[in-house]
Length: 415
Image (cartoon, rainbow, N blue to C red; front, side, top):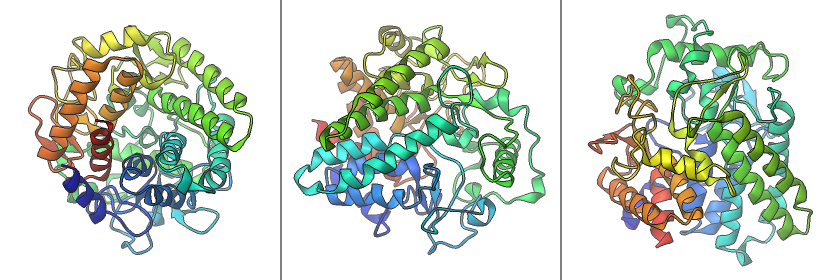
């Protein structure tokens, strides 16, 4: 298994970063690179450091880390929306998108350092200020509600692009005309597995509006503003990691721990309902009644007061942890559950890795070991698929998918 996973990462390595998939995703993606570094640290901590620092070259002056850094060697129309659509560049001239993805980067940086403390001289010093600027951007520019949580302004920023949690707020968005863009994702994946043309048109319109207002979070007339539990839970985890990095560098870790505590309190107060965390539509103030795997990701948050209730939900009829393959991305009890369509039911390897991490922190050894074994077996048997059917384990999306391979290496190393 390890040899095959290493092969996937070697095939997808560009010399300075790792593409998620040579066919479907031929550029560098933000949270993908963080997950990839977590696995690479077991093979080469130096390459894991390169992975993260190459992503940081795409960081904007305002601190945001865009969700795509475009490779100039890839044809400009190989992926849509591509660089000509986004019309955005980092400080060093790298062409990028204008939106972000979940902030797991500080956790990845800390784990990478721990894998090789002696060999990472200067790494933490270089990356710490960039990570601080990234979190400051989120805190200062994306705290768009009145409860202290950060918000996403596009479904793609969640990393769970086609989640049923976005259906209600997306109804406010008039889609871009069908003839105004050409999808590329369906060239490489079955249309039945991907978002519908209607949803894709809405995604394009949201991104175009943001672009046309200079990616200004305060001035853009946002039609989609949502507090997502996964995004905020990963920000909390990364704030704890920043505290560890700060302490290692001789800086004061207290501000990071204080912000993490404040976010944790707000997360429970604003988003926890009926045994699960739900997204909040900031524009209406309402919680969105869609139970998705994003609502289980706060299991990774240290000291979570409602962890026992959340674990009971994971084990219960909505997700049936331990009975289904990995963890479904949407409640099994939902009328519109779909085991094959992108984020509307299938199980994903990265969310399973996060939930495994939460189970370990909660000392739920039995559940954690069972999920690890399922993960490793499925990663190999599906040729490192992007995601799978939670009942049949049939692979969907891309194969030889980088974060699946990287996180398999990490879990294999966990023993």
